[in-house]
Amino acid sequence: MEKGKPIIIGCDHAAYGLKEKIKIFLIHRGYQIEDAGTKAQTSVNYVDFGKKVADAVSKGQYSRGILLCGTGLGMSMVANRFAGVRAALCSDIFSAKMSRLHNDSNILVLGGRVIGDVLAFEIIQTWLDTVFEGGRHLERIQTIDN
Ligand code: RB5
Image (cartoon, rainbow, N blue to C red; front, top):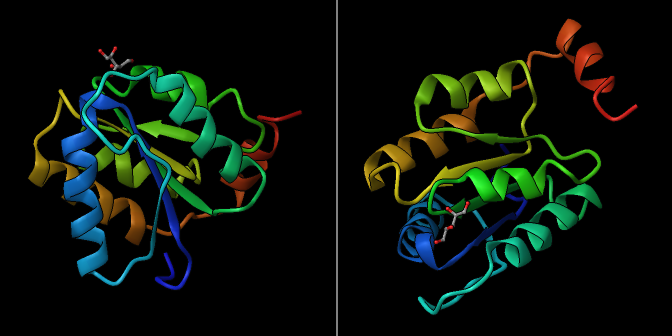
């Protein structure tokens, strides 16, 4: 992914610590970040932050987003209800790579209580570096929203 385009990131309290570390990781690598919250460890409803990020990606305001909650499950359920959003919950590098190659995922979802920091960074880097294959996969994803 081009570093000139900002990535929108959102989380709930369960993944606040990991979100802060991911911001530092990405900023050090030259990416621009828009933090949609949450911005503290106080308990919140993940749905509010999932909607914010998914809506922004759905409207084309951001081409890529990252969402985090405890398991990643709630965030992926929320995000995938938005038109044009293809949110991929990944806990391994292979899935992150395939979610880009074949599914052109535009939101990466991570479980802050599932994976460690270093694996999260490797998943993110793979997800950002992998280019969609297009072709037959483009024809397939085009049928998701209609
Ligand atoms: C919060 O306790 C937890 O339910 C949330 O982070 C997430 O895992 C929901 O899917």
